[in-house]
Amino acid sequence: MVPGWVRIVSYVFTLGTSLCILSISVLAVFFQSLVVDEQQLILSPLFAMVGAVAVFGILLMEFAHSRALAGYREDRRKLAQYAQGGIGVLIALFLALVHPLLALPSLIAAAISFGGLSLLTKYMRKTPQWDFNAQESIPILSGRDFFGFGLATTYPRLPELAWTLHLASVVTAGLSGMAVSSWLAGQEVLAGNAVGSVALMSLWAAHCLGMRALLKAEAQPEITEQSHSVVPVEQADDEEEESAGLRIRNLSVAIPGGRNLLTNVSLDLPPGSITGVIGETGAGKSLLLQALSDPFGLRGLDVKGRVHVNGSNIWERKSYELAPQSAFLPNQPLILPASGEDNLTCFHKELSGDRGKRYLEKLVFSSQTASDICAVHDASCLPDTQKRCLAFARAFLLSPPIYLMDRPEDGLPEKQIAALLGLIRQEIRLGRSVIMATENRALLEACDKVVVLQEGRVIDFGDAREMRTRRSSGWMRFVGERQLETEDNLDTWIRSHFKRDGDEANRRKMCVVASEMLAFSCQNARAAETEKLSFEFKHFEGYCVLKLQDKDSAVTNAQLDKARKAAEAAETTARLTPLAAVIRESLEVETTVEMDRRVLTAKIETYDPRKTGSFTGVGHAVKKS
Ligand SMILES: Nc1ncnc2c1ncn2[C@@H]1O[C@H](COP(=O)(O)OP(=O)(O)OP(=O)(O)O)[C@@H](O)[C@H]1O
Image 1: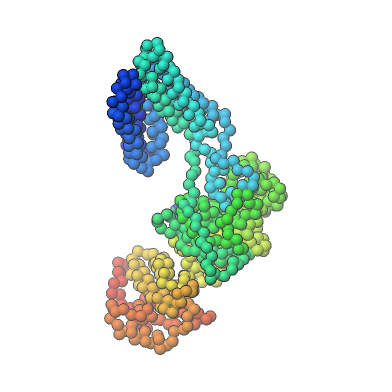
Image 2: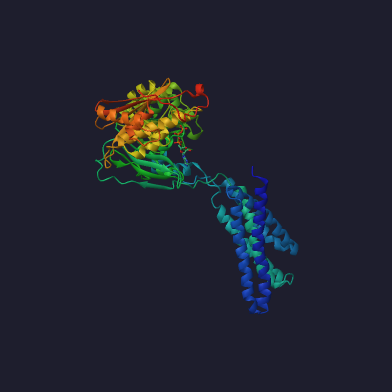
């Protein structure tokens, strides 16, 4: 619902613009009589100035209109067109009062606009914004061209030829206005110097009435936006050769001039594997999948990075591709308003529709249902589950090296999820890979690897079975670069474990310990090398444990004793070495070596905010072991 003030402001500015234009037509009368007829050339500069003021007025009105109603762009346009309809009628009435015949050009223009447009809307076949051909359908239906999908599924706002008709009505009104007024001037009914003015007014009335007719004929909105920029990042000189499988390097997605939605995602996924992507809502799972498949379709966002599959750039896309590099199955299945069979075979019947139908049969458990789905005239009208099955069957028919699935379980009953899993396993045996954002247990259990996203950053990536065991025993893991820049991510990760009201002091203390452990690890890190470190975390009754693992040499007992003494001797505010600071904040610190990795384990006292009420943690005593 448009607020009343928006309507009033819009009508006032539209009227203002029209008055400026009409003032030019009044000026034309005086110009004709004083300068052209009476040859008072001295007045020319004055007319030029007044004309310029009117033109400036038009610009000013339009600018002020857009500024005053910033944020109401669509409403402003519609309200202006609506008001123009009224202004067109008023001009026609005014002309009719001067002489009934002068209203004729406006009437002709209105007939052309309203009549012509309603005929076009009724009888002209509606065509989508883009009538693609068969080859172009594969990038669209494999989820590699969202812009194309949008164009192929939305219809233009106005019927074809609408603007041509508008132009015809305006020109007709201008010419007929001139003809009628000249004839009336010849009959000495109208002053000769009013001819130009009448022609101009008829022209403007026709434009106003035409705009109202266009508003009436309008349908769905156009889509115009695409990603703001996509910047491929070159391979670094010291990076090893491209390997098989999917390689993602420094993939970032950002709002231009704003925050990062995905930050430096780098992953290597082997061929023939299933990778699950998990994380809280808004962590960036869908965004990651779409950025891999079609970065150009991320509306208004900046995308940077490098994504290669089996050595070739996945983002390179041709409009005619028969074998896509990936198939993206978004949460809403990509189905074009075409037959079920065309949607299955991507309009390529020669692409072995039988094979596609077999996939479909396996998903819907009936050859009759599969045939019915294929035979349907407009697959976009199918029930949601059948649309999903159709989209899956099509993806398997295309057999790309990488499948990207966003919550494939949504809208599918358990037995269909099991059937889908069966087909996924077949693809895996053929060396293809699947990446899926999912929360479904059966699908997660089938994963070989799991990526954990948090606020657009990868905080954990590893073997799925190991991760499942660890998580089920309450241990959470964070994996990051062994450098101080990791601190922000680490901080966010630590904070995610202390979300209860009153947990602030726990949170702060844990962040301090984690940060000092990171600094301790980075002390010997070589700047040029990108090494990984990991943290593991678990809550216990009254304390929690934070473990740091990196590839440095083990801490000696002497180093530990020295740090312990420094921690005991120091004032609370004194600056300590990172290890001593960890010891000062912890109940117990120990260091071990596990499978060639140095492990530093800190046990930190925590409180239960439900028991301690509004405990702030300031000056909280820490026991030493
Ligand atoms: N085009 C966009 N412009 C601005 N922000 C966006 C855009 N697309 C996504 N986002 C933001 O990016 C973040 C990640 O979104 P995404 O849809 O990937 O989350 P998700 O992890 O898939 O969540 P869910 O599990 O709820 O689907 C969200 O904060 C979202 O608002």
